[in-house]
Length: 390
Image 1 (cartoon, rainbow, N blue to C red):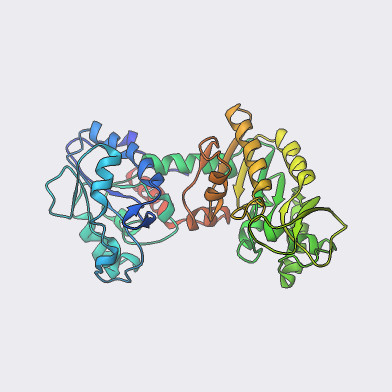
Image 2 (cartoon, helix red, strand yellow):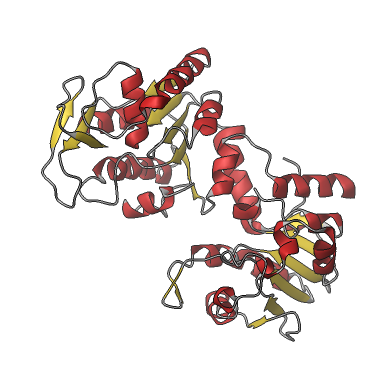
């Protein structure tokens, strides 16, 4: 990837437009997770130290469907940004504050349609554009793609950190590489699985997805959740993996239960002795130890999706133990660990090690599309802007 970063920009006395993703979780009027806000502070600090004249922040929030809707106004955010960033943040295009947040981009239908006139109207406010929203990079919107045609464009600090981590994990990793892919369905991650088998040395499967692969291997899985109509596809993925010398790791034992509920009675079943009336809801100790042993010899880990139903205790044990082992290796400098997509962040946070992984992405759809090997329009736009400026 070839894009311009802020270190290469002349920012002094310039009006700067920064695309951020402030589509943060809100409960009872309060932001319940400030991770995205906190990661953006580095860019704001850099711009202030670089003597930028004015810093104008662009973001969307929710799905107002191209119309003004007070339920989706960003007016509640400046006070929170001020507290988290330690700098006064004003609100609206007419704010006199040096740092200000514009109203929700998606109030204008031109944002999602990538209308050139809307992109141009945004660009008219600034001298330089910065994209610091990797989580929005899979969308060709006016504020992520269209605007780059009208202003010199750069990657922000958070964007550059994300791209560096992702490149280190999949594009140019230190081998051996392990990928852990979990979740409920193969059907939602077909492209991810096919792409990853070309890139990694070990593919560890977890969650209900693993059940479908066990079924495809001829294993009886009792009453476990699976996708019977995806067995042929699972076999195709296994053939692809074999051709690419990627070893697929499926569970050796499972935690099984009749009822999926908090503190339900359960037992460990060693494959192939699977009880017909029970469901697999987590991996057992043999599976955990097997993954950890292989991980000891790996240099890079890419993680997407839990090993079991981590939301219900004690069926978070498999995810927790493997995540904690990966964290220990990462802290010791023996492993580069990158995680993200879907409920992965929540699963690793539940294990208590979200700050000990090398990098945890807060992006959802963009992270998954990157795993699929797709071109992300927001990143392509930055690359094209760099070529134009060269």
